[in-house]
Image 1 (cartoon, helix red, strand yellow):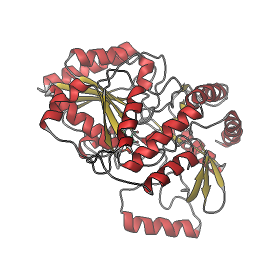
Image 2 (tube, protein in one colour):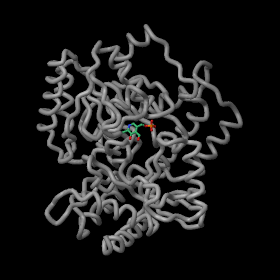
Image 3 (cartoon, rainbow, N blue to C red):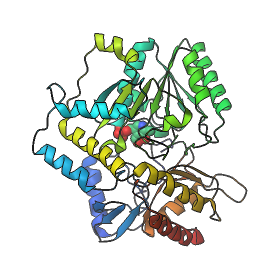
Image 4 (tube, rainbow, N blue to C red):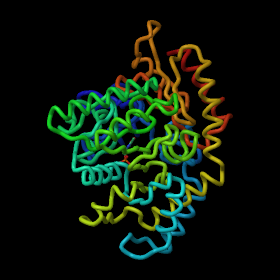
Length: 430
Ligand SMILES: Cc1ncc(COP(=O)(O)O)c(C=O)c1O
């Protein structure tokens, strides 16, 4: 997502192509009621009616291989998750002001997947709320409000967090207390640490003390920064020695996507002060959270109360528990590692594509001109060409020249073959 007017990479441009009459009518009605701020994907938007595992089905009966969806991360409409939600909805759906077993059981189970130092978890409904709460708590703990973020970061939609999300474009002002650094796309940890130190210096010159380094630990919207594992550690050290905290935004890479365990920060040998998570946590049901070190929230908890009506409600917890069951039961982290490795190798062996950065099933592929310059137009043609060939991906990065490939964790080698076959067809014409 980028640009001055808030438009995003791979956004539908009204009037650019002729659409089926029914789709155009729905687009017009949608715009009339939802207003001007929403965007649709693809030059020819998808009109979806059903999902199953890695497949999305359109109103005209065609089906699409979903290589983009990290929300329905264990597969669209996974029966185990759907059954768990339905059973809980038919039994009790209430909030955290009553004593109920499942939220405590789940919190214990979730915390067991995290380093022991992360001893508490607080539930929200969205990744944005999780980051907002994390920043409030970090601000309370440090007594500071300077935040360092990357150049095309996206952390969410609340007033505070939109101001820490430069990928929303120049039309959305950044917070005065934010400083932006280039993403470590090539894994140069020393340079990233130096950039963070420079940003802290800039904050200090403006009389602002550092509160936190807030990063998506795989830098999804910046273009995916995967290797070498460990590149993030020096920058975190710099922030901590300046008195700030490390907030690992795991909303994109969390829950096994990177194939090296449940959490991407672990690839860097780091234990964050706070971890935010969401998207895949409920496989589509809104459930998100902040896991954090008890010392960070002790003062906040003594002074402020926290309640979020729907955050951690009974159905949300049923969905989230079922997601963990599926990840474990179907061996999805191992699958992400194995299929992701084969997928990245196939992409690396494909003529006409630039560098591939991959960890498990989070893959970024640069699209470059012959002279090696970023080629966002061709990336856009590939994304839309694939869509027309029944395969869904999108693009990422400041200039939108990086293909973003992020399928459900149930993606198989057969799906990779199908993807590569369609990609070859598209590349011949792009
Ligand atoms: C890295 C990251 N953090 C936070 C968010 C915000 O999550 P949500 O849309 O659930 O509020 C997103 C959403 O795309 C994200 O990609």
